[in-house]
Length: 178
Image (tube, rainbow, N blue to C red; front, side, top):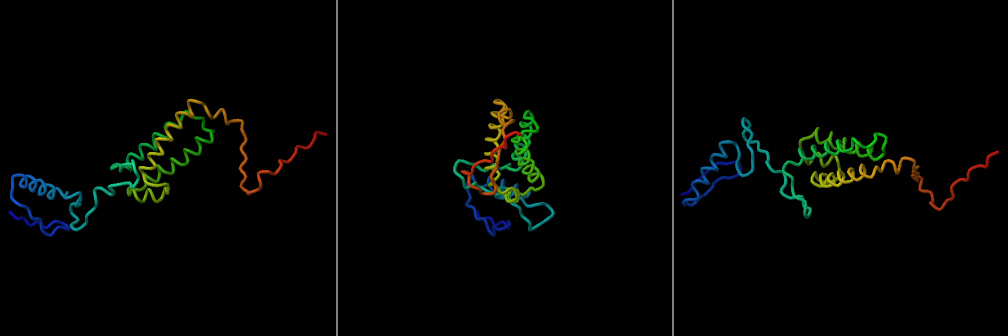
């Protein structure tokens, strides 16, 4: 049996007749009727326009699998990080910095549906990488809270040498009291 179907980019589909082919053909025809065929969704009412169901099949990074719901899971993780930060005092530099970064990422993910666009705007890799970093951040937040690290740095003064001066330079001496 040879069957020819006119499907998007397929001109002709030839099948040999055996017991396994007929159920397969029926399933393929049902999927086509619903607008789904070989991983491609055909939006109803817009003939000729196709959009891919799966945008990528590999992250290209060893040990890091593609998350088929990357954007949604990324948004959930950002919300979890913001919630985990609540026990840390609002004046803590760590909380302030992490909130700024995560809020930027969260707002970007909410504003765009295209994962590649989100990755491009954030500029720190793929969503899967960002989620991997987010898992590490959640562990760090737990440790930060457990050790109350904000108390350890509260009275410290940090000097950032942005002028590129030599670090061997002596610090100015205090003037003696008169």
